[in-house]
Structures are given as structure tokens and as C-alpha cells.
Length: 295
Image (cartoon, rainbow, N blue to C red; front, side, top):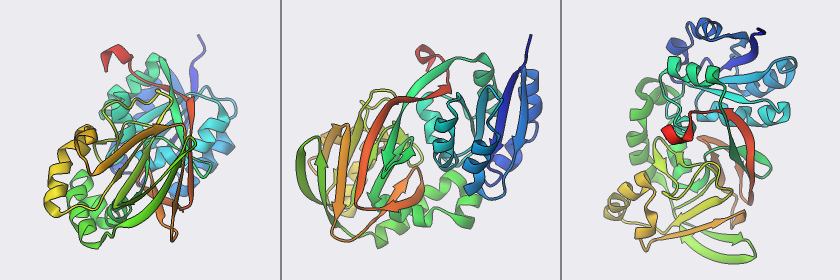
């Protein structure tokens, strides 16, 4: 029987890549998958490697965090091959949304089982993303959640980054146009999700699914410190509809404009600026995932 051939691309700078990548080739070989493996020192080259090396393989396997997956996505979609996910990042929100375990041996088993699922892909200014693109407070968090702090503290870096971000963030006015409707809001955070989880375990909406064909959007009005504390459980569990300071909507296309250009945080990376156009490609990505009934 012919063994499956995989292109394995690992971001060696991801949170647990140094420890977790040891033996991955052997794990995949035991599971019946032969690999040609790449560990590009520059994470920006992940997509280039996939574009150059995907001919002749049956699947693409990416080891890294949410930023690595998102940055590789354009090349994966162009290759039209199923994606295997090895969660090696700090938060691994996309893997969490799919029920892919953090244990890499179990993640390899899911790939070897060969069961695929088709999930939605979001687009912001034509750049694909998997989890959430956001403006405002989360951008400040991303600026602090990096470098030595992120490397040493990993997921524990998020609370410290939130505290620093709270000191520096400022409210802003935003115009939101969606499906032939328009509104203007003064807010501190706006998020547009094609997935379910983001930001180290937060939930865009308890109703959101990775394959529901919708963008889920929320905007948060300026809050006091006590207001933020009251909001935190709902950010965690996706129950923001309980709060009058939060505007919720779902749409298939959204345009966001601000008076001055503002950075957009896409799956944990700052990649573009407003004005931003968001859309959804339903079930555009095929990937290896657990049985949905067992998630």
C-alpha cells in the first residue's frame, strides 16, 4: 500500500516548537505518513515554502501557533490540499475550536486517521484568516504580548499584556457597514470572527461555529475598570449579548472605517490597517479534525 506523502512545515520559533518538534517525523512515519520537512528560520517564509514544495504531496502539515497557521493559509488554499494542524503555539485557539488536542502525539493520530472537515475562511482586505480580526484594545494587547515576555511566560503573558494594554488604549469612533446597513459607534474594541476562539481562550460568540458561513461581530463601548471586570466572563464564554455596552451582529460582509488608520490584529499578528473590508468564504479549507460528535 502506498504511504501518504506530507509536506511538514514547522515554525521553529513557535511557543513549544523547540521541545515539541523532536520526533514528529518519526511519529508521522509510524502513522504511515512520509514527510519532507522544513523549519524556516524566518516565520514569514512559511507560506513561501508551502508554495514551492507542495507539488507531489497528499497533504500539508503546519506546526506552529495561530499566527503561523494564518500566515500559511493563502499558500495552503492555493495548493488545494488538506491541512494537518500541530498545535505548537502559545494559545492554539484554532486547534481549540476544532477540538484538536494540544498533545502532539494525539494531533498526529488525528491526521493519520484521515477524517477531514471543511471550515470557513475569513478575509480582511483580501488576506485570509481563521479566528478573529480585531481593532482597538486587542491591538494594544498584541503589542505587549510578544518578544521575551511571550517566549518565557507563554499563555501566562496574556494577563500581564491585558493590564498594560488597559493603561494605553484609547476609545475611537468607527463606522460599520454590513449587508446594506450602516452604524457609527464609539468603542474600545471591535472584533470580526470567522472562527470561534481567539486571544488565548476567549470566545467570539457562543453561537459561532467554524463552519456556519457567518462573520460574527462585536463592538464594545468605553468601559470603566469595573465594567471590564464584569465583561471578562462573557468574553471568555461568548455571552456578550448579556451586556448593553456591547453591540452584536452577524453578516457575510462588513466594512470598517475609522477617522485615522488603525492597526488590525489578525489571528494575533498586526497585518493591515483600516479601512478594512471583511468577507467570508464558507467551508473553503479542508483539514484533518476529530469526529464532530466527539468534540
